[in-house]
Length: 159
Image (cartoon, rainbow, N blue to C red; front, side, top):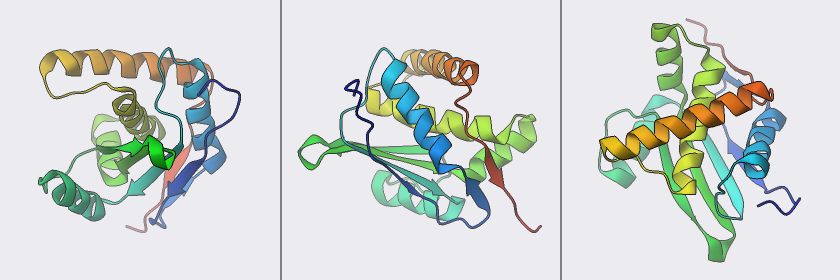
């Protein structure tokens, strides 16, 4: 997408507890589109920030697996001008951030990067592919962090 034209990014966030800086999330993907050595297909990119129940239902409905997962990525349709959809589990990111003492914003950004890499063509079905994907995740995350493109996400619950 290195045409100078920024892709349309749709953000779906039904979770009232999750605060998203939409401009920062868009900037993350514009940065990847402009600087990464590979690209996702042209077209609109859809992002869904889902709580665990909805994310597990999606996982069950489309992948026949009701267990929790961090990211589900759907390829786009070039004929419909769709680059793809990245669905992330905000509850899984929150749990992992708390148990592993990592920053929630960075963990959720990692999930977005993971989904973006799937759209690029990376896979994680076997050990060799998982290793290559992890390496690319680290490269992308380092670049995003160095260039200050990690969005701030706040997940505020009343418990």
